[in-house]
Length: 342
Ligand SMILES: Cc1cc2nc3c(=O)[nH]c(=O)nc-3n(C[C@H](O)[C@H](O)[C@H](O)COP(=O)(O)O)c2cc1C
Image 1 (tube, helix red, strand yellow):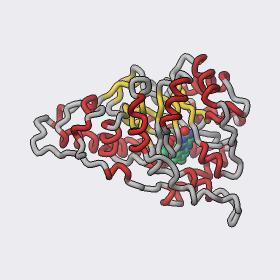
Image 2 (cartoon, protein in one colour):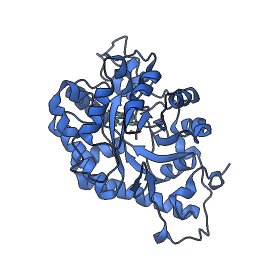
Image 3 (cartoon, helix red, strand yellow):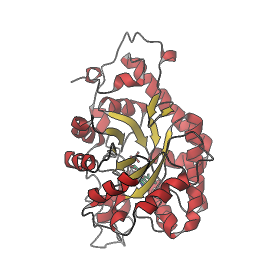
């Protein structure tokens, strides 16, 4: 999420809306099968889809995943529409990288969302690699303060940085630096990939650094490698993004790898989650919250109401899934392998 300028954020949005294949639609979740119940023994209308994360109760475990922000009308509108919709539907929301507001102070307005979402669970966002380019605790505090955020996401995007024309690729000793900042903050830090997943070693480093939340953000959905490919000059020998467009751990696989750490970590899932059915599968695999990004981009460019409609549809899918599994409340999904066909 190298976003020194608004131009780059606008470019990303342009590429994603023009190139349908930037969403890889790998359908990894479809390989997991549910045991349908012919006798669910629950009343659909009484199913409780709520969940509590960081002390806030959500209507169901959905996160509008980090996307954007910056000094441009379109970016302000997208964030405003997402925030209004998150508040109305009772789901969580993350903003895109706030790095831009440190070079272009006018971009701050796009991140002042608390007025639109007074009770929503809101996550600030910065690139962790920036801790190796001069960012530190003051930037982290400021990012939280502008958004009045409940937590700070540090995103990890080594693939994206490696395949883009102007990437920051010094990821040395980053876990220690993340730990140093996390220790000084009075809000939780969430570590998040952007579409390539986490493996066991990453989880161990995160735990050692005092981190308690990981969003695996695995592969299967939006491919940043593919998006960055389009930003290279045609025929550039450095344009290797297509070769790596499907690199990474699929979201369900990354969740499975991190299951042994569940006592010490709370896991969020994102990357290619496209329905309430996928959400239920991610929760069974150990996630507590499910993020979706690109499915909300077009609705957010349109109106808050369009985002609300998209969320309500996903909630209906989620509730229908619980009904067909004979599950009365969200918590009963957690690590409940008996719901799956072996
Ligand atoms: C337009 C757009 C911009 C994004 N910008 C950021 C960002 O600034 N910071 C971040 O952590 N992730 C960012 N992401 C990544 C998403 O939060 C998410 O991890 C990834 O897209 C996988 O989810 P998806 O398959 O549902 O899109 C962005 C995604 C999209 C679609």
